[in-house]
Image (cartoon, rainbow, N blue to C red; front, side, top):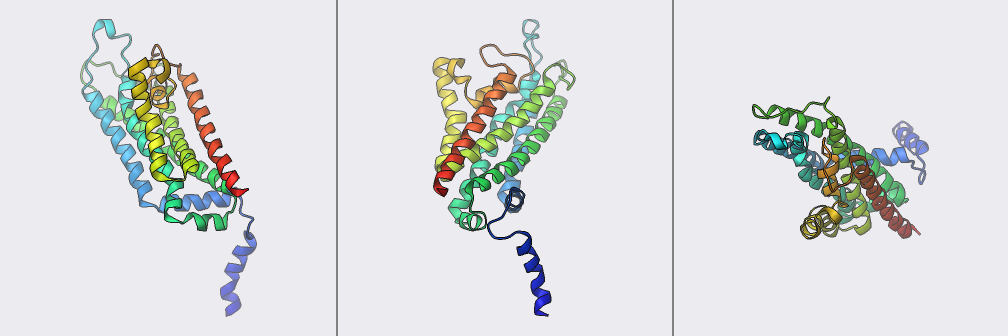
Length: 271
């Protein structure tokens, strides 16, 4: 009887010996932790509701452009206005994926099971980044379709077949995922929720607004929010800012740089 009851535990220990957890094991652990938190589902629901609501309201209040402005009219950019709110929620949740464990002390259990902090960070990034990408793409397309339906009579309706529209939707969804990864990187660097959120909000909202008010887009165009609003989420080019693909490459570079900085700091703590 004793042997029969202990055999499942023996098999589990034999399959994953102490200190031999691999990436797939770490990723599975992170997925279980992430989906078990109520804050995850509520935060992602907030992203969906906020982006769709802002997109619908914006499009419902969009008026038909005058003849001299018809060429520059970009309804796709209008409907994706909610990305600004979505990125805040996705980014803060990314911060909490890391700092929440340090605040609650559960990071001790995580590191006891997987002592390699870099492996833990990689698993968190893969799981949360993948989930954010799926949510970001879905909400971008849902927002576009809902907002398009809310357009008034006489306003040109964009379609997925129009030049630049599909690319704008895909890049906007990917942007949300990368902001989530930046949040994870900032959380790994500071390991403190308040400071990490302050940095994230400062870089995505405060600094672009202040610098943009002083120098226009000359410097502000390098910040993620300005890139998202004027380069990624547009179907028609905007003067004075980066092209969509250049802006997308910069966001990718920022994401890799922040995650690499977080990884280096974690590696030093392991040393």
